[in-house]
View 1 (tube, rainbow, N blue to C red):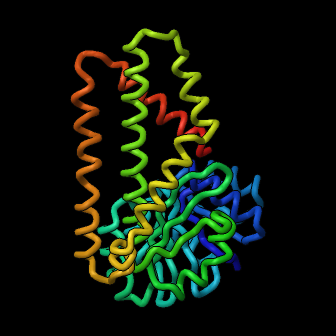
View 2: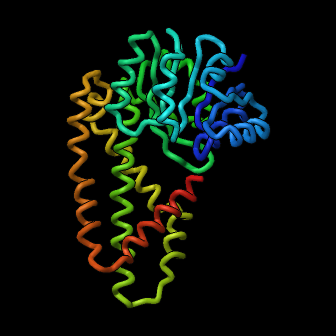
View 3: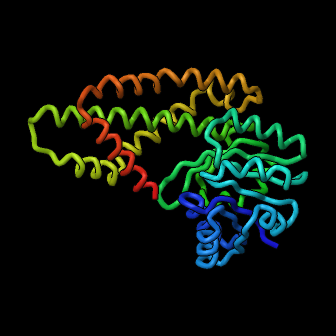
Length: 281
């Protein structure tokens, strides 16, 4: 029998599955694209499955099932196949309230859900986890394969994706600042700067990425924030999210106010997004 069932084998799911196999974990994998699943299984030497039923029957009890990014549609058909003591890692969801709701649904069946916010960081990933500590402890081999020394238990169900949302807000605000700065350089006309080359230089040098990490750490180290993230009260998480919203709204307002009839800023935003994705790969 296999150690872990993996659902979703494209994009980040493929890379994460490769990391698991490279660390020696035995996998059974499923993807709606059966050809892609078979190809990856042959390359990485794991068991390909053509249905969710086949996948679940291929892993030993209690099952450990990992929903990779992009596999959200598989959650509902997966539920009736699970049993008490199974552990589901849901890195497919994007909103923390969905994680809270799903955790309650699965808890009625005695199933543990771990919500996993995922950030791409070069070769490995950063994982932000919400859920019960004993279940997370049982997942350590998988966590260390994907995120060696970079995974964090943030608190109860929902907190993993909540912290990931905070990270996204920071990244979006920083990207907006970069976009405005590039637009100012172009508009000034003082120097004939190769803007794409300059942006790539910044990305490779890691100058603003390091700043994002410092901002994130400063936010999470606030003495009045960590207790709220660790709280079991969903309303507290909602309050904290509301406190972060003004910064994101301001960034969006600047974005739309600065568009006008000039598409340059949109093009820069797209370029930065593509370059950031390339760095994550």
